[in-house]
Length: 137
Image 1: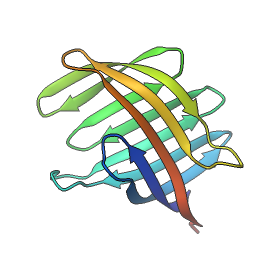
Image 2: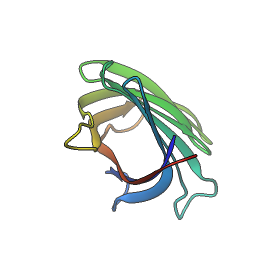
Image 3: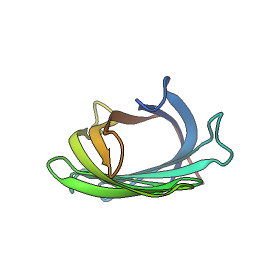
């Protein structure tokens, strides 16, 4: 596991979010872990993003005041849920594309539409990139 500085871009935030976290890669599976605490939140949210290029999917697990597990896979309608203080919100996820990291570009980016069981659909592009890294040991 390497300590890393991660840059996260998403339509949910106005500006890129910079977080200290960790990164590992084993057998083609990349794992990113970080925490976020924003101005209007009381408790930090812990995130784990698992990138499986061979399986052509990304899984994002969130813990904190809101917990969730979302699977992003192009060409498939996947389901997820958000456990909030208002109850569980079930969502259907349609992933447009995933650009997996490569030797030339370390950025992982994916585009998706999330359709909750109630309310309006949300379209978003999410990306994560390691800016700095240091091996632990």
